[in-house]
Image 1: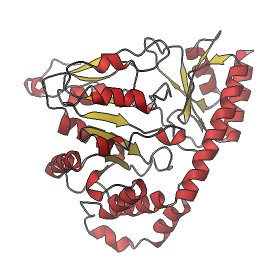
Image 2: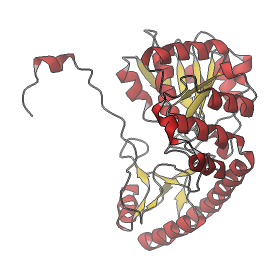
Image 3: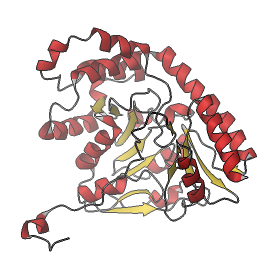
Length: 354
């Protein structure tokens, strides 16, 4: 590479987040990005079929009222307590920009969603990672110190470990002067949400997504629920950056999806049932894993290195997620697919582990 140009010295340089592979082939069993194996609510298809494409010439609603109102009704809060964005990544990024302006370090786990440190670097936010315990659980004592804000997922990623709401409230109570964000991307697969805390504490922000439990990763819908004061601050920043972030079709589809409670419960229930069956099968094959309450399992084999299993599965056109990182370098994160997809995975693992 040629010598750095003068103008390059002013560039904001960061190491970007690297998502799971998105193979172009269609005959792949894709268990590497925690997507939902089932289609969205049939009501979403109806919106797409009936949509008047002439509306495309108009700007979308900057307030996304139809979507905000539907989410507020579903979760029993005021519309003024709901912020929507283009996926939960957009929501969290906006929250970082809004609330983490202190010169004190923000805190998040050392093993967690690997976008947090990227956002911190992009926005020049100082941060410190707090070690998980050996069993991958959060130690609340690590968050009882001076800080510029706190964020962690529950269940955590990539471990799938669910923390109790009592432990989380212990962290919240210890941090009345910081914004505490709970990233609940996977909460619908068996966890208890921290949403009640937004009424009890005005510094708590709960973030969720349509990408996992509502099968709409391709439409990019995320939302945050918090006190009216927190949401106003976020909207002030959003409307100072880009008023028209979410297109009209997405707003309409998102509103219909969140109203279809029956379909939501059915598909989430199917994934949970497959996950529990998969845990038993993986254990029979010699894998160990923390008890997952998400739509994935974070598994390590007693004899075979994770890197070898990862490559052998890939040869068989089965994609799972692997990180060559300290503490988790011998684990695979396996998304829960359909029963048929998981059976194909188990057949391949039996062959690889012989």
